[in-house]
Image (tube, rainbow, N blue to C red; front, side, top):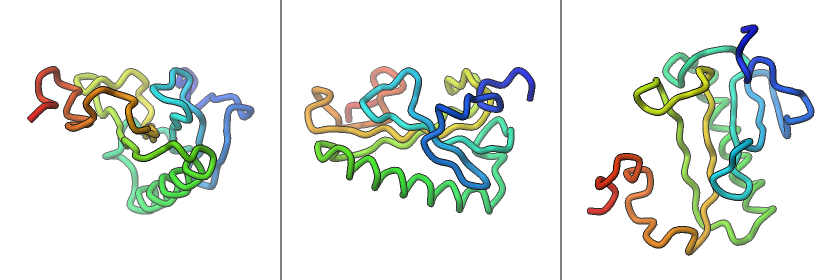
Amino acid sequence: MKDCIFCNIESSRKIDEDDLFYVIRDGFPVTALHTLIIPNRHVETYFELTEDEVLALNSMINKHKQLIEEEDSTVSGFNIGMNCGEDAGQTVFHCHIHLIPRRKGDVEEPRGGVRHLIPGKGSY
């Protein structure tokens, strides 16, 4: 797509790629080594990926989890997330998966994780 930032990404930003996906560091990282995994094929959301793409995505997530842990021994957890649709917060309408490394103490209370997306729903 002509106007899609991820369809037109600069190759110098890519840290890895295969036939179906490429990987970059997030331009606005939540934590150090925040990584994006992006399908080469333009699809809006995760739900449009093929079964082969979902399998390849899982392999790429696991590969980069391991690489991040090897690069930074302080990483003790991960959030994996994606925003599917405008009402879920999606602003770039090309599927992309966030692999966010977490470290002990990076937030005061990590319990609830992604549930904190909606204020007041994370603590239980």
